[in-house]
Length: 59
Length: 129
Image (cartoon, rainbow over all chains, first blue to last red; front, side, top):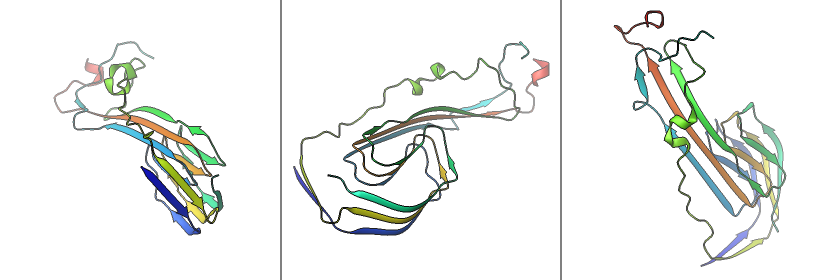
């Protein structure tokens, strides 16, 4: 595969982002390789109902 | 040859653990995060609870597809400047990268488990156990 890129002028006034979540990337520059991974495990599978299981050691 | 980045102003309020604000060039950035977020109706927490080892998602290998396929890449920088007036990112979460400048390899990884722990009517309270 042949890949040709021609970069002309780029001028950006303002970049406004409300927030970046985990494993995200804001790049102002050149980079040939980016790998971003994130895993989430969220309810309802992770819902526990009942008291806290605990050893009765007072801390 | 990579381009030069010029940013006049950056506004950030909060950067989380293992997040990166890089000003300048870098070679390889590799932030990793593991987190267990526990919300309990009754805020009782024990030291022995919630070890990463108890949950397989923290030790399982993440399948990574190779980005190293063979290709001929030609890049011409007619104008070798990237200009940005202002960057505003109030909140940056874990394992995130804000990069002003060039890099060779960015690799970020985050694993987050959320647990909600509720008490229901009829359950024993902590004192009654």
